Amino acid sequence: MIELKNINKYYRNDEESLHVLKDINLKADAGEMIAVMGPSGSGKSTLINLLGFIDTKFEGEYLFEDENLVTTTDDRLSQTRNEMVGFVFQNFSLIENYTVYENVELPLLYNGYGFHQTKEKVMSALEKVGIADKAEKHPRQLSGGQQQRVAIARALINQPKFIIADEPTGALDTHTSNEIMELFKELNHRDHATIFLVTHDPEVVPYCTRLVRIRDGAITEDRAVIEE
Image 1 (cartoon, rainbow, N blue to C red):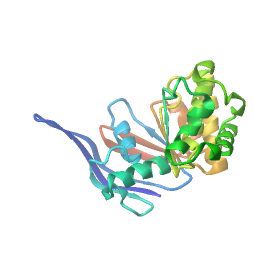
Image 2: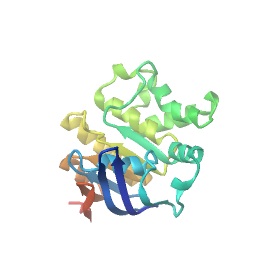
Image 3: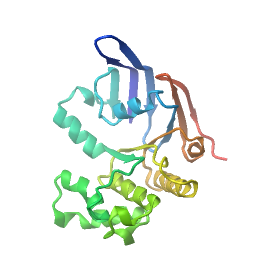
Image 4: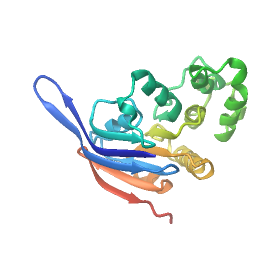
C-alpha cells in the first residue's frame, strides 16, 4: 500500500542544513500494525508527518497504492489526507465545548456530509470503540482512556486506508494504556485496520505485527513481531 524510496529530509536555514531523515526505504502492506520506535530527536515524528501527507518537502519517492500523490495539487493532497488517513494524538485533541458525538461527526461534515446523513456512521464508530453510551457527554466528563477512545472513533469515521497514532498511550496510566492497545489490536485483527503506532514505550510493541526502529534519522531495525 505504501512505499517510501530513498527518502531524505533536510531542514535548512541560513547557517546550516540539518539532515533529519537519511535514505529511508520502507514498505507497508494493508492490514499491518507497525510500531515506529525511536528516542526523542530520532526523526520518527518527521517520518510520520511525511507518511500522513502533512510534510511534502523531501527528496525521494512516496508511492501510495502505486501513485505518487506528493506531486499532485495541494487540494488533491488535502483531500487525500482527509479521506485516507486517520490521526490519533497523545493529547486527544478533542474540542472541549463539543459533545463526544459532535467531535466524532466533525470529519464527516468536513467531507461534505449533511447532518441528517451522519448519525448511523457516528454511532457505529462509537460502538466500535465501546463508548456509544457517552455520545452526549463532553470531553471533560470523561476519563483519559475514554477521551482517547473518542479520538480513535474520530480517526475511524471516514474509514481511512490507514491510521497514524502518535504516542497514543503517552498521557495514560498503565492499565488504561493496555486497554487502548487492546482496542488497536482488535481494530487491526477484526477490521484489518492498517496502523502506524509511534512510540518510545517498548511495552506496546508486542501488540503490533512489526517493529521499525529509527535512530538519528535512519532505520536501524525492521522486523516482524512474533506473537508469544
